[in-house]
Image (spheres, rainbow, N blue to C red):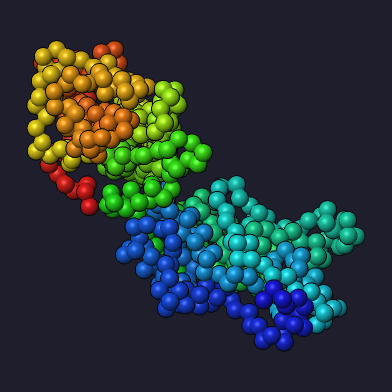
Length: 495
Ligand SMILES: [Zn+2]
């Protein structure tokens, strides 16, 4: 196509422009027929969101994705770009990407009249046909649709009412492409009316100009479901004009969640030390998000983004990397205790309910981690005898370990604990494994027993015997014991 460089050549080639929704539909039909992946990189939506999305596109609908944060809404919208043609012909330099075969703006129409078949053609790649805007209350009609540009008028010596003095907003600039508005309910009512006009008439009128632009745009939106359904947040006629409402969701299984995090988290660090992330560490990180989504101390309406496990895993790997570098180790193996070092990527990812605020974000996050470790450990060590290890502590043993302790030191210090090494071997550290792998497995067993409250852990003493339960008095704060519910023997997190 790029060989075609003039309007005359374009006409001679028999090229036919299609409305953007037809173009997207045609390309989707072809993808389905050839069995291509429809939305590559979108995991866990194959039976829920994607069929509805496909139906909306086949119906040439404008649509809205309703979901909480971190449910890949923006990613899905950006994925629509792959359904556009690789490139389309445009009038070079036109701000609204006019079709050389049917230009809208005055300047392009004048050029076609003047230059005729010799008019040069440019080819616009599909990436340039996606315009995205985060809705905020201060977005104006001028931002969205356009305005008079008095400077342009003055410079060109034009009358202000001349169409050539228009400054185009985002929407006209998305002409012949996709216009995505994130968080639609945050848009002022007046702007929503503007959007409604596009959906209704398929054109926009720019303030003060007698012309109407017959734009060709696919409009897609995202919103938090509760904001969207709240009375008065979205003007009814606009809602009425959105063809499909599609609900997104968080991963329903830990397998999907693991796959998403594996895809997104930066753990394979080129140029750095070799890194092996144990499966149980990945599971604990994922389980933190699952627990957070179910925790009554955390606000359900704002949700817990999948970005929580993604950034957490990145910090977990970094903490392990830092330890390996400081201790001169050649292999980076993250431990469960490294998850506690990832608090900075957890505390900011949820909103607390009143009860959570009383406890504090950091303590809520610590509780979640401990509970997540308990869940993963119980799943893996269900029915396994841990008595000899617990007895060693009950007889007065203690282990002052920290997340900075070198792998060889962890192994040396725990050698005397009968049965510990055998338990570690069950956790991904077969005999003959490298020291950092063994140390990580030992750490997992100790953290697991701590999560099950069979041993205790404190900043000054390290791991020790479980404290004998005190008789609770009325003045006591709620203790951790009450807050943590470790599901025992439940397999529901393993899919
Ligand atoms: Zn134009």
